[in-house]
Image (tube, rainbow, N blue to C red; front, side):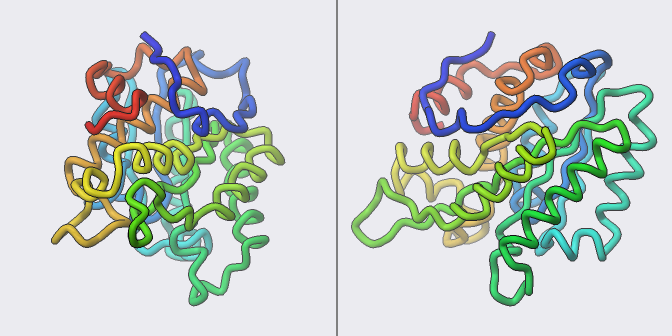
Length: 249
């Protein structure tokens, strides 16, 4: 059952990515991204936990990665090899989610180069017969003093670059940034901080609870973008209803 949309910001810019091929076969999801996707601190394993056989997936997110270092370190070639190995049997989806590290001055990556790198990633996946899902960055849960329902929109430019990269490549946008920012603003600082990693002061990465919540958010966003995939996800109506009605989950 598809859930109604209460976070209107989450509905931005969905382009069709190979619509005639989608859902011809069971899906396989390979997750490319930085630490906000990766195992131990990201949403990726929360997404994979929602999959139902014969759907499958693998989290290849890398802590500290930029769009440049992910390729230079061999992680992107790992992603593309999995696409090659699985595309005959599965509709092979690749979530591509970067920005947290690319935006740092020390990265040496301009906003224009960031977008170009995303475009290159998406085109390479399409050329291999896969389906790229340009996934905007998970919001940081940083609230200015006295603004407990107004988290800093620190990844605004990276979000727009990812959306533009999707438009230029005919790919699908999974607008996690808009959805997660709207959600943490709705529930407020105190509740949002219960998802913080480690000692509770890390407002970028997720603890196990946050991984479950935001992994579900991503799976719901994917289903909205690709409704034919719904049967491959284990539903959790209680959690989904809480998220999309702006209630703490």
